[in-house]
Length: 577
Image 1 (cartoon, rainbow, N blue to C red):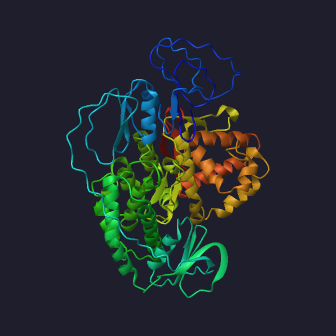
Image 2: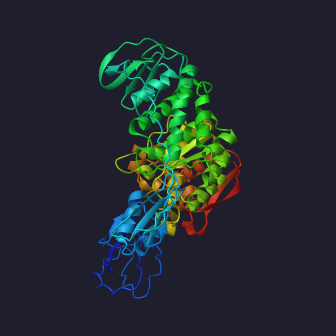
Image 3: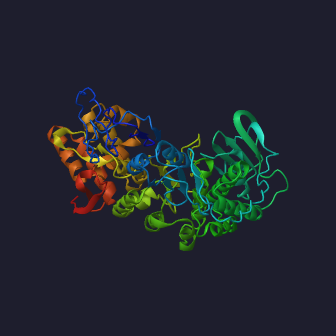
């Protein structure tokens, strides 16, 4: 079932099916055909290919409304089918793996194998188990006990480490009203804000106002506030930023090594470690002083070297590995030995080639990562350097919903990288979206996951406009386009929306249309021009100038395979000004 979590429904018999665009259904074995559901009123939609059903499947459409044999979220087509017929599937959680075993009539034991894709194994009998750090296994129902595997020596439990943040001087409900050293949004705790202050030798006071950390360089005036927490740089004796960072090294390294070995940390150690990492990164970025925290990054890099460091289960610990890796990148963004220690596979390739750091809890599959690699390889260097990176050493692309479980939401990565954005929980090749408004028969069924990548990437191009002296032209076109939907190339969104959300103008028109197929975009602009509207052609020329960096060679894109692949081939077109 199409949705944010891609829910898998398992049904005990052939079922009624309803129309839900983008979803799929299938069957295993031979079943008695179900009575057909009443014929629905046809709804125009993009056809979605469905798997060839087994003989005598009795499937009336391609979407099931039955789940009497169970369901689980974060499924793929393969995992949903495998859960119905047995076997194994990737990108599993403990819950989806156990649930898949429970709803399968023959499954008796399950195992969640630690790895980049978290593979779930389903077994028809009680099985031998081998030692694999971080993996889990279990059984359902009544089974004949298997011959036990040879006894192994249990791994020692790590000794709890002491606190790194002293909260004795935190003043709740008090605000300093001072941020002369800077501020940062998305700060997760007062402790993180305090550590940021400690990493700046000229910092005296700090305040966490909601999720905004204010850093102050003098003794401030205090006032009451309902959501603020403030404090001094240190609760005890003052010390330099370098000395403060050095005293954290052994504790942080012990915690990360423990996490990499066991896949978890105790609640207090986990939350404090995250806060310290965010505070160290924020203080370093605002002060420009990497030397003070270099020893911490070196220690954590060594702790992660050659290890997957994935959590045992989905929850607050899910993001720790990615927080540590991004912290190491922030300290040594161009050091191959550093990023080679904390990244691997196609995520390492994306960072090496494009300085794109993927934070996705291992969610994105090889097809999605390869397609993103092709896209960023074809993106003009001006848009990449001035837009996506925007002067930063790297950008962080998150898939926040890949961490969404048990009420946990992904921590903010804003402190670790000056540039970044979030993507939806989508894989390339699973669903499409009609990109164009449809007038003149100009249409394109574009892959939905890459549409989101194009759109969110194009949000970064807003910062390129002033570097090319294009802000006045942009504002003039925005004014000329008011009040008429057809003045906008993506007219299905509407003039009212664009006037109220100008930050969506480039993202929606360049991301959803130009980067998918520039030639279809030009055809649409010329069609509107022949109908008496010049502004759509003006918007097309804005995108040409952005893509070309105002040169006479304009990068244009043509969709490959009708858009469903998510790949667009670039060709550079000569322009005369």
